Length: 640
Image 1 (cartoon, rainbow, N blue to C red):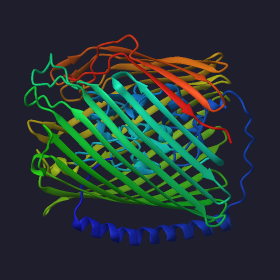
Image 2 (image 1 turned 60 degrees about the vertical axis):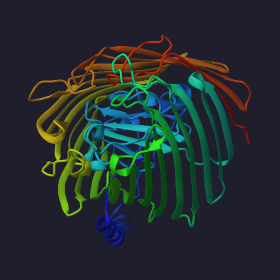
Image 3 (image 1 turned 45 degrees about the horizontal axis):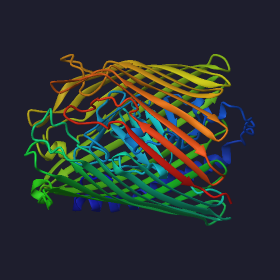
Image 4 (image 1 turned 90 degrees about the vertical axis):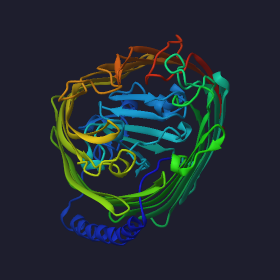
């Protein structure tokens, strides 16, 4: 659920782009089909996959080069959160799930459902691109992504790609990309459901059913979640805070159907609807004030997969997204002029193609995104047009990757309009020193065009320039039959960084970050081990000041073990001190414990202790975080 900018003129250009992009794609497909049929020899048969403990630690991913690769073969830095891990950790939201992942820092203004931020490799929260089943998530008028309302029971896996990857994913893919894949249909029929309860009167009910026949597959999932929560803000740091509980509720439905019209052509339709409501504290009025934010969002996508030959595959996706945001104070809805109502729309068209060559793979495609929103009596629109191409190959012991992309972004408010364009690239190489030791290196560029709110909204500056980013990294990885260790040294440089100061947005000279990431995941019987550690120095290069809410050191340790029908473990999340404005945030260490027991073939019970040592810590100055909590889940999944 997200909201963005647009206007009537933008809709006209979107319609035009819908006319011409398929034509351009068809032309490219025709050329590449002829090339595939006339000049490419059949590739050698792929080697058989031997089941070893490493396979579960080395899954197939698609984010790093927009083609299927095993994780050990990717060049840029990437980590995966699997469905198994999502269930084992039992996190209530996406923000809680990714906290502690290598290269990821998060903040939240209170409890579940409140404003959250994600910092990838020390970059601003607006410098991370989020995709859900290949569709770019909506953003608001200042580029903020709202993704906390995606129910985790509907997610199959998450791939986190770090570094400047604008050449792969376009504008704002600076700190990296979070690719979220919802759960797919399984063979045959499958039903699953569950209920949970816990501290702060937290309750959840969810259910899902999927079926796959010879040519048709469908799935539907529903969820209802509610918690009474806790006071979002800390009254000891702000005497205008209402210390009552700030609750959160959410209702959602996800559905998808796909049908094979032939062995070369498939058509699918998917959609979701999420309604959420969250109480929050303002801290700017009186201690008796109450605030309530309601959000309705929906997405509907039509997609087709064309297999024009054994080597050429095309995926075309058309998506329409809607958002309605309503804010109330003391049980009365605020007017639109006071920010009480924001309405957003986004239409996107994507054409993605993959051509398998005798040696390597070639990807190419384009996208058009038209978004609009209305807020405080004004309307804004934003248009993005982009095209990309890339090549990946293994030659002996050397892996190569090259990507390039061209983007044009325009923002409009009334008669005012700003258009920016940029060309970005990525070049990477990997070298297998031995069957288990590998070196990688990559250099890349990215950019972020000012959001329409930064240009024309509250405190807007129409003279803003686009941010320009460069990054480089060198990595070293070791694989064995029990696990994988990867060490990466990275460096990023930003020019024309956009920041809000003195009630307006401005470009500042330079922002820099450099550091080291260590990631280790292994199965060491009887334990599953996952370890991440980051040492970095995110700073304003002109003043030397550290960037707000980012630590110099952070990481996590996750240990789990299974004995028969029992599984137990814990995740320790560690962060150094941070600066928030003129305030200092102390280091923190939080331990979450989990336990599960398989009762029968159909029933499983899960338990989680959140913040087991009841640590008092802050992610944002003035805001509370959860105290110790105990939660239980009962899952039902009959065997067919």
